[in-house]
Length: 561
Ligand code: ATP
Ligand code: MG
Image 1 (tube, rainbow, N blue to C red):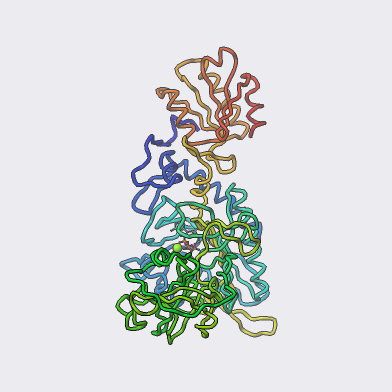
Image 2: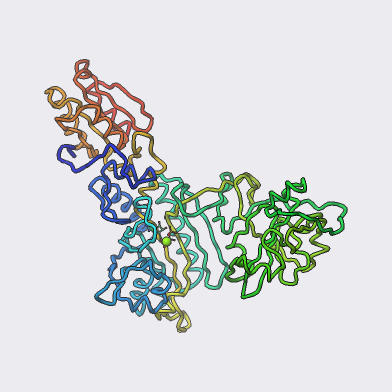
């Protein structure tokens, strides 16, 4: 492609609305333009990369026996009502005003609709159906460029099996295919598992990349690969010390002491000698939650420990419930349910609130003084704590979800009546899995992991073109003829070359654009070099420069790519 004929509108400055590197670089290199919040147009350079990712995904999906569909984005609302998902998606779902239609945010319903009455016998399964298609979600906070869009491309796949073992196999196949896809794209990812253990095999795994732009926080162990969302992650945090001799419980006057830090300072004690109380409301009843020192309650863990939704008690409820305000609450004398973080297990000689403003209690032995206490893992894992699996140091960071594999079970087949006859002629709902990849996210996340202060750094697999051919002064005949010759030969050999043949553009601008667009190799043809029969090759990733004889340039490029 000749740059002079190409539509590659590069920009010197970062767009005002961009925060993360991939967003800035995709706009600046002329890959995308925003149409409206969360809605992006792919320009030719960006679309070339997108198509390469799509092709990799397609190859790996076909390799596991996937059959490609193309479903409509405009769906009758009725089908979505049958599964209860019009309500479940709420405002995230786009509704079409003049008819009873919705714009599909995913396609479980529609695939199940097509399976229904067609996959009638166990003999017709397993099936893997997929598509690479546009999805619509009215994301409340679209941001980070194409990473969270209101319209985006998803590879979504659905498996249909006649047995739970079959579902395990289909799931396994997708897991392998996903690893191949992300490996081939050159993305460093990790896998976060989640198993709720609920009936219907609701196992799921998320393929994630580390990024400050992420909206999930995960704990990750580099040495054994343990990865979990902080909402469920665990670490090997040691329990507080149990002293040989338990002191007696005694009251201390602590005027104006509210926080754990203030208490530690006032008494000259360590944070780990204190137990902080929080009151939550669960099923209209109060629950006292006890944490060690300044450890915060992880509400997701609390909800799964209790088995339902909780809310913190309002400040004005506290006095009525405990007799004291926040900062003076403690486990002694409490008549309702008390649960504590595992870290406090059987702790003694602890300090906590006295349920009387401006008073605390010392010498608390949880084993002796709080006999009905229950222990759960309730705290959020922090960087530096030991991995629950291997004991190495955990790192806690933000991450983006690239893909998701999920054992759906029979939720959709039951709701939509997609039944099959088993070997015994008995009717059963089809057992399903669903598997998604955000195609634009793959692209953006590749860039998040491959850039420098000059621009994007492509590897040859995803690069929109492999080679930048820069004619430094296209007004000089020797430069033009050398470039034309190289361009002709490389294109003939099947290389994708972006030939910067622009006449009125300074060499500096061509260098800057080449680094910004970031193709793996740059061939730099200048008048001075040609006088010595030399052409320069620059490797974008390393910045390494090689001087090559004109006659050897094609061989050299072939060897390098
Ligand atoms: P997130 O937690 O990031 O909102 P999700 O759990 O809603 O993701 P899924 O419904 O599992 O995502 O969709 C499958 C894939 O589609 C995701 O793994 C992600 O890569 C992609 N995806 C989801 N929402 C968006 C979006 N708003 N913009 C771009 N890609 C998206
Ligand atoms: Mg979402």
